[in-house]
Image (cartoon, rainbow, N blue to C red; front, side, top):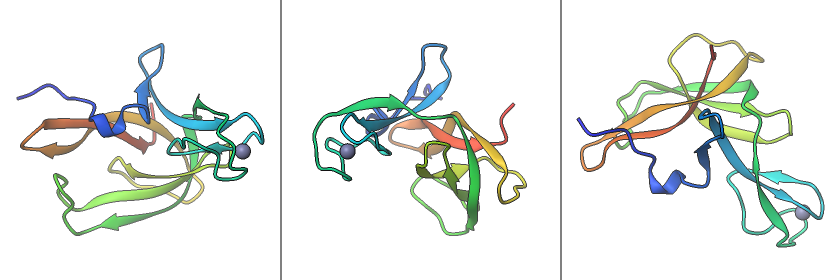
Length: 132
Ligand SMILES: [Zn+2]
């Protein structure tokens, strides 16, 4: 079995922090203070290009979720897909680790194998779950 790899498409969006824990990277506008995810090369709110990478909060509130019952490339159904509201106002759509959830529940960013792709081995990515 191949080692888990971080797909190039997620580099700069999902990274390990200094302590090795997962962190989502957004963009922060130095002009208006808005944060965005995924990171943008320019601020969609004020159109300035003075944006910089910023680490997003790991904990969020589960706003909604659904059970996906159709296959996705490399992902066997069923799997959970949720919308998480972060404390800085951002909304992130992400897979959820299997489990039982309640609306308004706190969920935490985690990392792990998110899909199996025969051409690339296991792909590491982010998801949200109940945490430790
Ligand atoms: Zn802005």
